Amino acid sequence: MTKIVEWDDAYLKQCEANERRGAVEALTDADWLEARRQLFQELSDTYAGYASCPSAKCRRARRCVGDGPECCAQLQVGIPADVERDLCDEIYHEIQQHRRDAACSGDASR
Image (cartoon, rainbow, N blue to C red; front, side, top):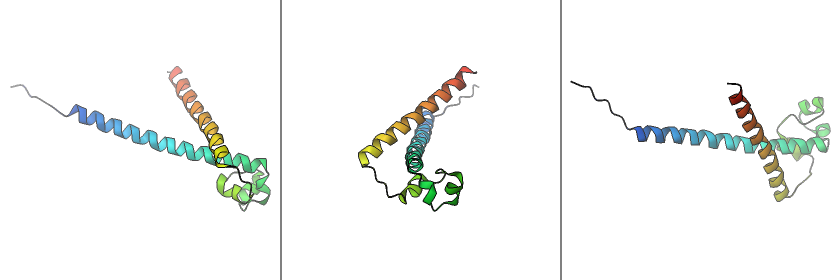
């Protein structure tokens, strides 16, 4: 007698797709947060925010090494929301380019 083994292949593929989608969404969210943090670090560095930063790490490093928005808050330098969004878009774009380039160079070495 032949043993028949069956499973719900469509269901397993859907589960894998959902897991991948969730991982990509989490990574995307993390990259947007990183872009915003980097923007505020650069803004703080531009205005020498480290000099009056409450973080001793920033003062010692003479640049922003902490949480960008928190460190930058003491500067009282505001930027319009649309400008902040545009700058975050640029930084996010750079992050994605670096990620793509790293993935491509990793593939080329195999």
